[in-house]
Image (tube, rainbow, N blue to C red):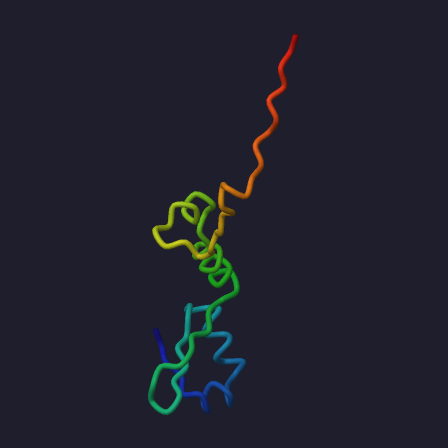
Length: 85
């Protein structure tokens, strides 16, 4: 991926945006380190949709992302037995 220094990306933003739309993702460097990537919106939406797990995947994850506290069974009253004559 082509890289742009943040100052260059700011100064030539329309060129930076055009390169993204024509050539694909563009990397922005900050103080010599890769800091961000500009991607076309279609690619961003695809990446975002692909990163969302399906319900099946979410339910089958080994480490749940929530806590489920169940009440103690002793706290529930038994239903009365109804006898029919």
